[in-house]
Length: 479
Image (cartoon, rainbow, N blue to C red; front, side, top):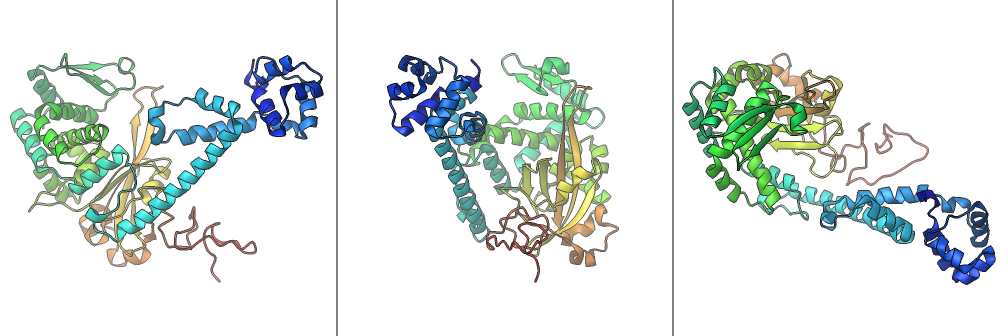
């Protein structure tokens, strides 16, 4: 029987709401109580004649028996139950749809509770973000259970994204390999094989969705043919880090104040990635080349055989005492605006709990794929930043292979922009006056004249005048 014929729970709910027994309702429908029981148990279909009779008896429209509303409620419930809070209960789509059919009123009440929970969380997070701005980091409030990825981002921020012990370990491996500059992939494969690791390049079909897979029991490493040379080198160095620098990584993980095994595992991955980048782009030579080229990311990519994202992220780690690079911030976003990686060496604030400002050039980079976009941005507190951004593409090793486009941004305080080649043709003395006004997120941004505002600022409640249309629904018109 199709779902659209399973209307028994709706009939039972209407009957109980009207205070009728099965026998009383069956008499009005001119059917037997046993047949009504079968209908309510979804063992018999509801005919057109009976539907019309029920609509007349209960004084409801026939649309009350439509499943479209149930589908919407089920979709809302599935979204609510996707919260990590409910992970341990193992709820499935059929479970939720059965709940809607069996208890539609309870299902709708649950949706209302989800909406109230979401609103309360947003209010708490917004207030917490405001409070965090006014407090030193060690005194900032913790807003409920954080996601493991958030914990790892915070741990990297506390460490200033610089790990001297991993730098030393990476330099030791480079000295041991010797020929890394001439043939980095061959040198790393030879090093792993010398450690009795069987390295194999597999077809994309054989690897499925994996790019790297390591079997510690048999000491076998599989790498996908779809990896670019820079990514292949990075994955080899990553695996070398897990083997050569495991003690250093364990020590860093132990001191990171992480609260879950998942967060600790993610942190190990992040530290192994750090090691890999340090192997490919050693500290001293990279910093010297960056200063020589004006931090020209593309020239650094070619010189060190790395990708755009790899170079940008590595530039944020150059914090060696007495020989520091520029203080950059780094951000990676997808086309929906979700921030999947962030680090603030420049002091800029990123949106942690809601969408980032659409005026930021890291979002505009999607309009010009593959091209570098520059921007002078000014935050509501008056701080000005010089930012660059470009899209990167992942996947695509084959006609049918999926491709993912991301945007990666790098930036620093405007006062340091004169050391970047990207600012060479910009009058920095006047740049701040023509800076693009950018906010952290709409709820925290006080600018009410923004045409791209998506919600009212926290400090200025929504005021609607039906006789006046502003730049946007939430932007206040002048006058």
